[in-house]
Length: 161
Figure 1 (cartoon, rainbow, N blue to C red):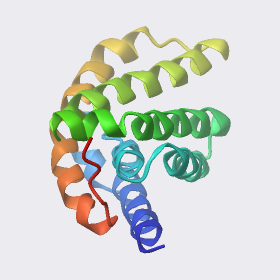
Figure 2: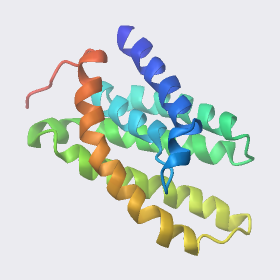
Figure 3: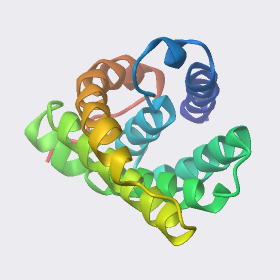
Figure 4: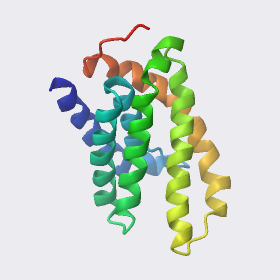
């Protein structure tokens, strides 16, 4: 239960950072919620990652107030589930794999959201050029730091294959 309490605290903190003034100072918007979902999924497993992703997606959809509420929920749930499924692979090869996992998760989430935007008639071509590649790079650099910081908080027992 302590892991969930810390996870929800980190989720609220990530949401506050995401809608707060920190992202206004940067030339791109970091998705702190995505980083927390990936870390939680890796540290707690696929089932809990899926549930946490649904909670995080509903929080993000509610905060944005957009009509893409369901798209945020599905994207975060898929990312949390896949991060949990790759849990044994991550521990077998070391913590550096989290960078690749976050890059793939960012690409997956933005693809799902882009498909939703295209279906509603919005153009996403410029979005890919200006936003997606720097976001993948920054997320990949920030993820190992967040992963190492959240690992003791979420009470992880390392699985050795």
